[in-house]
Amino acid sequence: MMGSARNDPESGLFRPKTRSANGGAVNYSYAVGEEVEEQWISWLVPVIVVVNVVIFVIVMYVNDCPKYVAETDGLGATCVARFLGRFSFEPLRENPLFGPSSNTLEKMGGLDWSKVVHDHQGWRLLTCMWLHAGLIHLLVNMLSLVFIGIRLEQQFGFIKIGIIYLVSGFGGSVLSSLFIQNNISVGASGALFGLLGAMLSELFTNWTIYTNKVAALVTLLLVVLINLAVGILPHVDNFAHIGGFLTGFFLGFVILPRPHIGWLTSQGRSMNGGIRSKYKVYQIVLGVISLCLVVSGITVGLVMLFRGENGYDHCHWCRYLTCVPTSKWKCNV
Image (tube, helix red, strand yellow):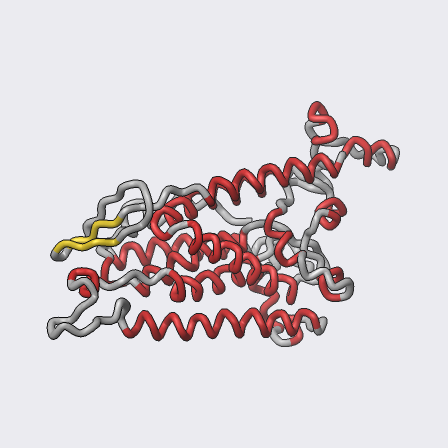
């Protein structure tokens, strides 16, 4: 579960030098020392939000808490918000986030290591990112997606942001399943952290066109660190956060570089009439290295996963990345 992203670095600090925006397709043009950028109309992020809400409603319909309580003779349990009928929530002692049972989440496609590895249900690596443990989980993630995703989609378009969202969610699921093997994992947090990671790498790879660079970098790093810190609490899958963040961070170098100002002002030609490179050398190098890291990282992760390996066998201290035991709680990892 990911904290709200109201401290979005793009709201004031994270902006290119002198930019204006209009609706329609993206078209970069430059006057001398000035960038004018038209924005995309954001539709993918709202669609993703609607799909997640619809899926949550369907999951609650399938869950049917009153029927479960009746079949088990209650056992002292009472559904929450019973006026909702079959859409009512599980008892708080089973799910304090106002949502379905773990059995329902597993049935609907939650990430279950044993089913992925032993029953060859690899599709769960994708379906789990569309499920949420409860109403609170759903609201926090969807608010974060709106604050982060809409601005990114306006700047880079639905194709690039859609790729980052889906691949980051998949990368988060792979890393999560390597370490979390006794519990069901659900949520879009890996994909959301991928968008945060892409924002960070986009700032680095397009460093020369931004003003207030240091302020934007510090603000963005604080947002990332705060959200990762929340992940050390019990019952929060920080491995999905970390996997999604790293995937999105490297993907940002691959698909979010902007043409440098010199290329646009000269319309792609050098002073002697030759063709100038659209991107700077460091952008190309970072993009190639990052693409190799994403492909190799996901490939190695999948090989380890389907071999049934446990991530803790290779990294004993990694258990502290997802939960730090204190006098207030224990960690079951």
